[in-house]
Length: 371
Image 1 (tube, one colour):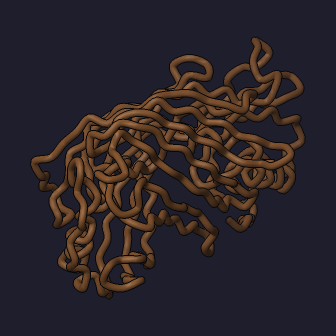
Image 2 (cartoon, helix red, strand yellow):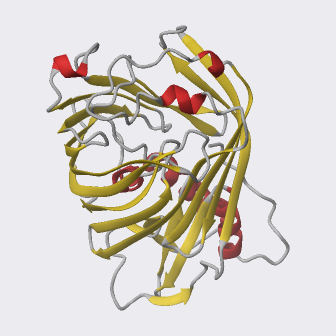
């Protein structure tokens, strides 16, 4: 995301101009406290995927604003206490300004996205150009609504007609073609969910979620994560009651539902080879039980590349072609946004998880260095 610097208004104080610069660069100030010689500022953000990017923008904004006091930084994301530099607590600081305004904050973005479908039995690639609208409403620092609407401008998904060979133990993902067949009919609801985030105790974070969670599933659930930014590892769990959506991307639900849940372990390695590791174990959407391992690498510009493999109590013979679930995923900069994609050689039912908008770790790890 390219740094932007607005014109300074007549009579604007250093603090007002700093807040103006940060707002233009998608960073908010949640709280400001002063002592005799320092100022503590609590920054909140949604847009930056790495701490290096975020801190670079904040330091440049502080310099450009002419702010003379020593700034002690602390950070929040989506209402979660993410990180803090040393020395920010103590009675020497007194509240001076609370800048998070009352009432909802609206964020809205509309654009054209390319949606590929690779390695189908009909052709190697099918593709759609989708007009998508993403809306976020921030009711409070902790309560959010996220919505996604999409309309196919042009696609060749109608040609996806060959049914899956194996649907054991339950058909939870292998009917993806029936969903894609309906993308061009009307405006489709991709997501409509409420999230509530809270850090009840230091390093202990909780997320509650309910609504239309993704294109194929609605439901409700929660996640817990123990995350200490001074440690290279984090642990937690998640539980969701997932209901399969109808094929027309509206509010209709099918008969199938399942309670899916996982214990999660995360580890970030730095030297000599930086990488991220995630291991999860639990029950998947189709009711099978097993574990998934993910290996990935995140770069300073926010790009991410990774691989995953899942092994459950579904035998290779029951799984059919492919033996077990595996694939690749990546996130790459594209203009001022990012292009996210996950690819599996075969879309099967065993090993299927919910496609969540955010996890607690995905949010909080943004405040750790990547190298």
